[in-house]
Length: 246
Image 1 (spheres, helix red, strand yellow):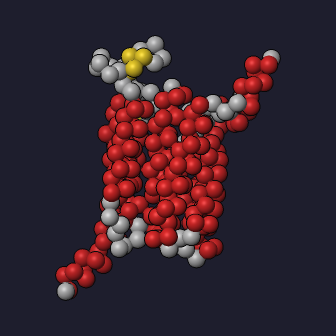
Image 2: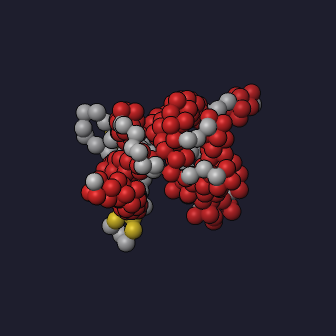
Image 3: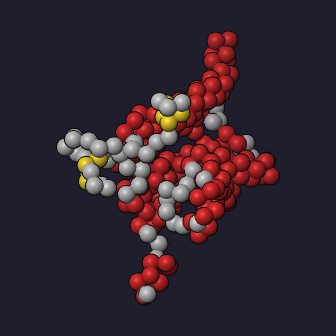
């Protein structure tokens, strides 16, 4: 009984990792926020509201997609299981909240996203580590020497793959010279993240098939890449035209 009580109020390791990642990400973002015309107060408020929207939106989206399961077991709604979460729904809700805050404060959305890019990059690292700590988002069985024993099989350490890819993206962003066009920094981060997911999803054991043969996660990554390239072209076009005229 005492152990159950302690578990109820003791946050699991993967949640602690996410909290640490959020704190580190916000600390890094605050160092560069003013170059994008966003105050530290605004970036803190945006981060706070965005995180709440991300968590609640991801859970609500997952519940709506699996309504029958939660009807049978309503307590699953407040479960701390990270698998009961839709990341794409979470991202959509988070961006809606960020956009609404920016409109209220008369801040340009692209500048907000640029200011938050380092925060997003550190959160991505934290997600990989949290999955590793929780044993979720595990990979397919493998005979490679760096496989890890998980769920009665030697599997691809996809959580480590994600963490390494996100760490490399963070290093590149830190070294990246800021573009004079707003939005480019964020779009580069989003493109690199989508590309890494497109590759790494091939090693994931949990996936959803569309039309019986296409992985839904990889299709979404392709779509994200396409959208990023379209926006990058539109954001960089004025610079190209100006350079040509000169």
